[in-house]
Length: 235
Image (tube, rainbow, N blue to C red; front, top):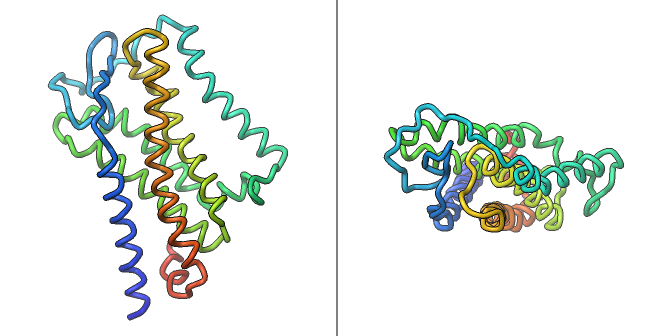
């Protein structure tokens, strides 16, 4: 019975994650374009009426601007590679210790980001809920990662915060600095586009940090509870 109660408690925590996400996710007012054709932006509940069954990659004529916009993402990738090669410890743990135990969740969120643009978006006219479903999927994977690392790998609050930074970079770095630069570019001047991209990245990262902070605080307290550990083994 106690184990069942613990499992129910974890389910309630997951529900809280979804509610937190639902309360903070807002429809973006920015417009997305594919070859000068307006299309619904991933994550935008205000689905446009244009047919988007076939998505044509945008004609990126401003190569220098695109490379400048993606530069922060590439620099972050380089920093992570260097940290990994040097086996530098961040809050007492190497990058390998942050990623290897949850490698399948990391691959999962990357696949979710790709599916949001290549699968969910073309189907969004017929199934508007599918975009929200992709958001819920990455939120769930982030939540599972936090639980597993705090309960079984002795992660403290600083470790959890850095995990949130990693997931923010992986999920919303890809969205803001790759997809929104090359696949669904914003309209406007270079300065306006940069402001929109940074705003999108920061807002998405805020959602990630909300999840990791709430669950981190809870499961750091519960990590030595045998019932919680038993019910979390499947993670």
